[in-house]
Image (cartoon, rainbow, N blue to C red; front, side, top):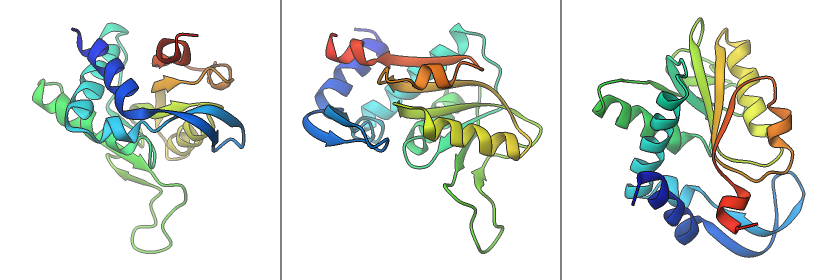
Length: 180
């Protein structure tokens, strides 16, 4: 079984829930993907990082850092940073806060510096891409250049179209997980 196949199985086993759910977008859905149950799992974290690093290499993406909006991107970025070091091609991580701190350094972006750097923005699930776009905007405002966006699962509900101005790589799409 490949890393991608095993990650697919973990997402089905740990993250996919059936029922009636209200999403962050306000839409209702008959399923919910709690990807943190996979990205915070020991094997899941490793697999997410390995598959994302494979995606970066396969598409020859340039990046000097990787991160996204807290909370969905946090475990993904941290896992990628750790596994990238283990693989000998270190890629530092950053976290975009939902708002700047009102104390201390008052930074909105923590971790790796993005100013003047080429970065990849990651997210766990893309529905309308609002969180991904917020992270992209924060990186650009801080002087960074976004080379691509990668998500673990694209729900195929308009997010891809909203991210059309840059390369977007969903590891899985709704149809991959639900068979639709």
